[in-house]
Image 1 (tube, rainbow, N blue to C red):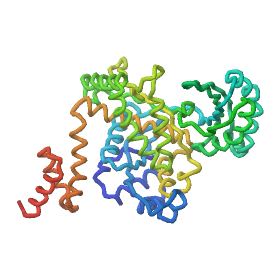
Image 2 (image 1 turned 90 degrees about the vertical axis):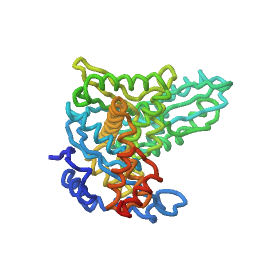
Image 3 (image 1 turned 180 degrees about the vertical axis):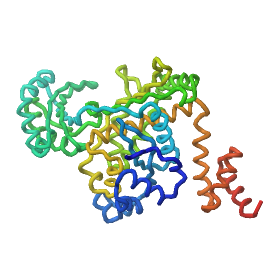
Length: 422
């Protein structure tokens, strides 16, 4: 049986960690070899991007301790910041005490917009387009019959009148179930196909025909109950709720609070070959309240037993088919490690990781403060940057932490002392 609770995982060598991961997940060790050169070489990269001159690698690590809907998961994360994976693992450990994360999601619905300009009667035009709803849906679905075969397809067509300054735009939305794809290509193709007919019905001309990354019909949710004693007692619980409430009420705090959530989310999205920019855009647009104020994506509440209930809901447009998820060997290996068998399952896992990250951050902020743990991890990067070797890094880090001097000049002096025998 797979377990994500691995004692001493951080102290193992890279090869030892790989061995543990393959044992726990059943993923063949050969698949993990894709991570040796960053996932793939320059020739393959040339087919994925433009004007390629090589590849750029980032570390991929494993977040431990995650239990999601009763299933233990080892989570691949790509990030350059050492504290991110440590925090996600720690947040998941705290959530694990009372059953881990519970998740749910909506259907994999994406939308494309068709903007019509120069319409003399926009409100009447809106109704004319709606009257042709079935015709337009059939035309759109004809562009991707395979999608319908696997249970997806166009679910609706809606039309809005968007007023701005002295303009009134007629904007049609194709609402599409994209199944296990992220869906951008599918909905964009459909929008292109129906655009001229929409313009004809509205009596104007088309400018834009493209998906929206405000994927508010494709939501993933995660929830966890956090034991008060595990967190550090009643005072820590109360202060975590205070920290959340400031993020909920103050956009200046919310920006950093939500950035912490996205530290975890973007790292898994990137590891699995999905579109980090689309997920980030959807998340931050979702953080705007009905009153138009930027606020916290998550909530932290105290329950009747004095524990914290943490929740997170946000758009999660990720897929398992198409794009880098299928063409990048490293992304394929990362998806295999998660054990996710559908885009919805992957979306829910990613959301749980974002909540784990948030839990760990608020726990630290409500107790000893973020700098102690963060700078301790940063000390290792400083030691490496000044040229410390494998046998020297630990000693340099230990001295920097003891002195609370996380500076390159001090690290250079400590390293010089070590090498001179002082």
